[in-house]
Length: 123
Image (cartoon, rainbow, N blue to C red; front, side, top):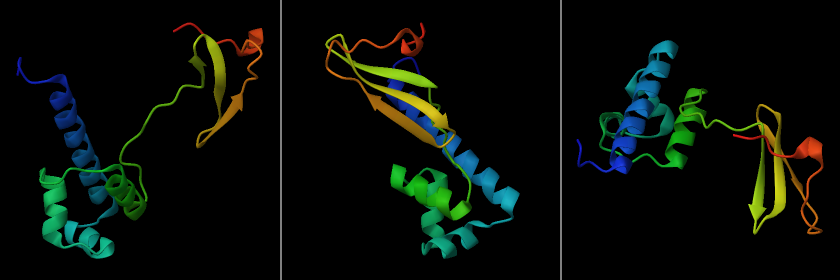
């Protein structure tokens, strides 16, 4: 394990997390792998490969699973606010306005200084 690249460790961990989450949702909803395969127009063996490590999930395949199951499989945490800086000038500010939406305010190139109320918080 000491020589395993960090990228590989993360991949294996995240892949396992995705598979476990899919199995949780299937169990909670009383859906079999065959039922999932039928509803997605896939063969049961293909779904078995997906859930057995024989498939490299893409964001599209995960989104399709989420849509079919009506549940999130992965969650990407978001900051309440962040600023994009280019060469010391703030170019954009994104603020979370609702759980599913982000509003982006672009700053003028006139120095890119934000008012004190919009200054980024220290990490």
